[in-house]
View 1 (tube, helix red, strand yellow):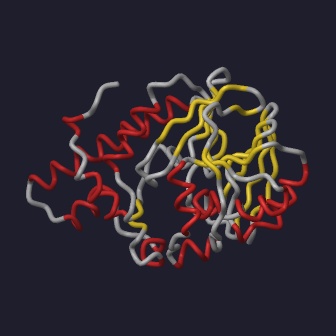
View 2 (cartoon, rainbow, N blue to C red):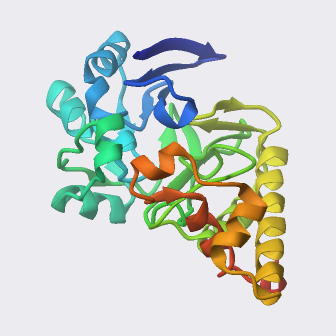
Length: 273
């Protein structure tokens, strides 16, 4: 069953879409703050995103990273409006050459067509308000957050999503993600705008909770490994058995991936910023 929902938050409006309603990981929110749309949404929901795009005038489309749920309609929006998507340099290159999507992700989000994006401007603004661009790799090497500093609002891409993770993609890195979370936590903000979870109040506290959870998980996993337990048993003890989602994804998205990556993170080497 498809998900279609529109909502507002002060002067921001948003559209949540999704082919399936199996929780937040199968739905996506496109945000619009004044003259700026943040991310383009999945291509299989274009008919709803098209309505959202045409509903109000806008000046720029900004992407957080290349993943198909975030960039899927970038080319279609450009074709419809003549407004070229702006993105981090690494994202521009990935969208130019195209990228492979695993079968389950294609089922959920649709294809990701190539798009001719342009690099972010040096002075990025949303409706005249200064935006701080914060590279935040780990989930994707090109992932970027956008902080509207005067408001204390931050568009976090997939940095937050939830305070407690149970699954991880094979191409994600917990050590790099932890570094990114720690860096973002050095900034002042209160409201997180997550394209999956939605609007998260007390966002800095919630992001800190995610960092602490992963830190504890990594500590526990490394201790069990030191005791000689195999990775499978460590995973079962800390997170339980794999779910149907893991099986359907061919274990590209799994609990074992999370534990394996956590074990590569050394809690004693936590950087201070």
